[in-house]
Length: 90
Image (cartoon, rainbow, N blue to C red):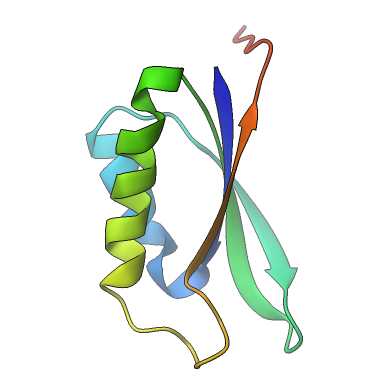
């Protein structure tokens, strides 16, 4: 299992969430703020099986690279992929 932490600019987050939902990928959305200018962004947490990680990363990155950035120094998406021992849903 992996935990994908994706920090996504607010102007594209709805497109990302729609794509994930249409592909039956569960995600938890957290509002966040970061960067020098304190621009709004959203952090998405995704617990996913190892074999699906590349597909999920590709979905997010395809949307991110096809949208304009806010400025030259701000990325649309920053992703971390971490090992996860357990995912518990109740």
